[in-house]
Amino acid sequence: MTTASITPRTPAQGTPRTFTDVVRERTDALAERDAFVFLPDDGQGSVPEHLTYAGLDRRARGIASWLREHGAVGRPVLLLHPPGTAFVAAFVGCLYAGSVAVPAPLPTDQGPQLARVAGILRDSGASAVLSTGAYVPLLEAWLASVALPRVRCLATDQEDIGDPASWRAPDTSPDDLAFLQYTSGSTSEPKGVMVTHTNLLANEAAIGRWAGTHEGMVVGGWLPHYHDLGLIGHLLHSLYVGGLSVQMSPLSFLKRPRRWLEMIGDYRVEGSGAPDFAYDLCLRRVTDEQLARLDLSSWRCAPNGAEPVRADTLRAFVERFSPAGLRREVFAPCYGLAETTLLVTGADPATEPTIRTVDAAALEQGVLAVGEGRTLAGSGSARDCEVRIVAPGTDAPLADGLVGEILVRGPSVTAGYFGNEAATADCFGADGWLRTGDLGVLDAGELFVTGRLKEVIVLAGRNLYPHDIERAAQSADPSLTRGAGAAFAVRSGRAAGAATEAVATAVSAESAVSAGSEREHLVLVQEVRLAAVRDGDLRAVATAAQSAIGREFAVPAGNVVLVKPGTVRRTTSGKVRRTTMRDLFLDGTLTPLYEVLEPAVRDLLDDAPDTTALSAGAPDTTAPGVSS
Image (cartoon, rainbow, N blue to C red; front, side, top):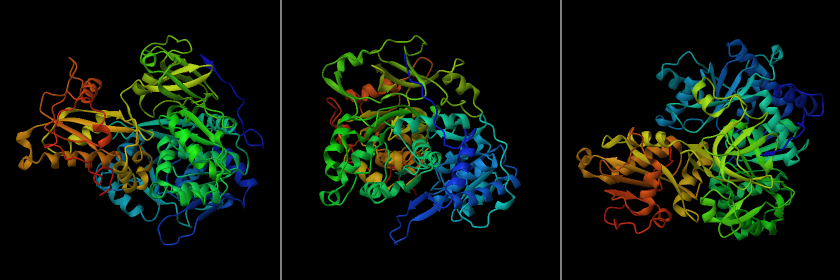
């Protein structure tokens, strides 16, 4: 077992009991400084949005007064905002009211995305919905259509909200909820992670000690505000230290990755992080001419997390961008999850990341040994917590060098899942240890994450549940047999290429994080009843399944394999054997009636049968992830 304990860092004035206290101290001390700058990208020459600490405080007081007037004190409030400063004011307004903020993606169509947000709304029991003036009328109509007309809506970008002068500080305690972080894309059973003020302060303290943050520090990013790294790492941490947060929309980054790097130079950003795919996208999309104009000399902490960290990406990015002043040691691979607020472990940003080449065969047997076959990037040491590796399915600790399930205990481990005692009991132990469901190994105090114990599919930092993906696809066409599909992920040895990149550019801003994964590929094997296929058009059936997955989960769904009834393997109790189906797929032993595969995925198949006449060839690059 590895243990790392730190003294929580708090702002200089006293010892705040809640994150609300932190924000109030910062706004008093830094009133006229910019707290946030948002860089729009509408192609119309718009100027950046600025929000000072005093302006944030004033807007938050007005929103808090409105929430109090409408009975939202102590209750969840759903935040559905496009990227911009209005979200920040809404979040702080919830803190000022003693309400529980529930950040969620802004729905962009009238189908599955709205159903997902409706699931979050019902699960949380939110008493109000906050958004912007452009979206409130649409949201009010939607609430009426789903029989929730009494949920009030407020546009937080208005100037005359509530009465800021009548605001009174809430009676908030450290153990009260600060916000709910909803995990995955589940519509039927959304799970809201309960983050208390104590959890948030502890994790922000850990981030500050790890990254060496300081008052006045400039943090920048493009991750969505409902993504835990974007929310806690880029927005709230800047408030915590009294710094400046510079933001752009996810779509701005995906359309022109160079804008992220330009922002770092223009605003002298010191800290900015992203999932691995984002660094790789910059490698492939930033030209030599654009590189010559970049200045990355201010960048001193570049967290790489939310999905598997690839050593090749770290090496290539430093080599490519060192002429722009990027230092080799700025990369800081890290590991965390919503259930631990955010950060669990992190590599020292003042030293080069740990890269290990290990014996692949030994690793498959659960042993970390020097050899050849697989390169691992270390995710650093524990920060404000204890990390333990145990034999999967047990609580028996394993020695260093042995792979097992990662368990975490500490002040950042959250209070469980909102209103879901069964799920809380499954993951949050009575002794304080959180079962992460991830596989890893400790070596000399450093964590190496090796894989996933559960069947959760991770694409570009998002955890997606197979049964939700299967359900979405099966609802797309009556010929697709319910409960007779298997969704899983396969990993290619290289970037997926232009097809995935085209999808990433096309998706909505709210989908940005998930759309860019080039190494993990989603595959759906689905039974189809030929007699129910309209006009025998299997291509149309596959395209409908792709579109349904893309709309609901905003991930590229370029690999769909339609098979005859009885093909999908099940256990004796009727559960789909997804791991077995993945093996059959990779072995090329499935006999598809029709398939559409990305080239990188087709290359993975061993002796795959020749189905050229049945295949659509290149994946459909317009349907997945595109909002209708």
